[in-house]
Amino acid sequence: MQGRIVFATGNAGKIKEIRMIMEDTGMEVVSMKDAGITADIDENGKTYEENALIKARAVAAFTNDIVMADDSGLEIDYLNKEPGIYSARYMGHDTPYAFKNQKILDKLRDVPEEKRTARFVCAMALALPDGTTRTAQATMEGRIGYEIKGENGFGYDPILWLPEYGKTSAELTMEEKNRISHRGKALERMKDALKEALGE
Image (cartoon, rainbow, N blue to C red; front, top):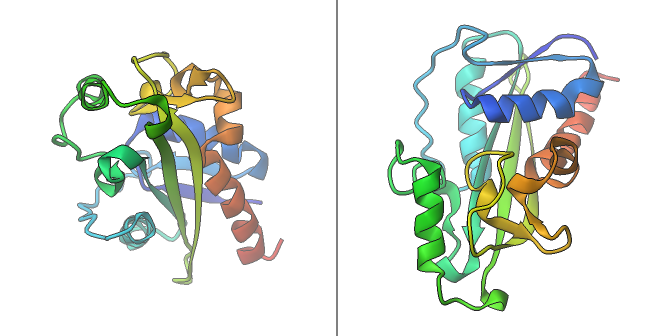
């Protein structure tokens, strides 16, 4: 596949992950900043998919490149699936994740193992220059751990414990994470949609 994908994010950690996963497509992946796009996007959707589409369409208005966007979040069953679609804005936009993660651990302090089920959800949207869009969604199931662990990843990665790996999402190598993560799986589905859209 040839060409360039503008990914609707300013998150450097996310762009790094996406570039690795999309490497085998041969397409260049750039952030909005790299593409010189500054769009003020109001993510007012009620679902991850709606928000991903809002972002993709907003950025697509500024470029003739293929645009991709995602909306992802952490759902904690014990907290009625909070923070969910508000994950990035949870406890305030500028609140550091170290603080958010500790607050979540405090809320679940006496909650037993079997009630700590949680997952990362990712919806991915693709906007093509002809105006058509595609979406894909995937999850990574786990539990909320008892402490902040791991230096890899970003956001809520240090508190999502993956029982089958015996470590948190932030303790996985990039290769492991890209293979099993919500974002990795959604992007793999997107690759198929891209091939189909580009007639390959």
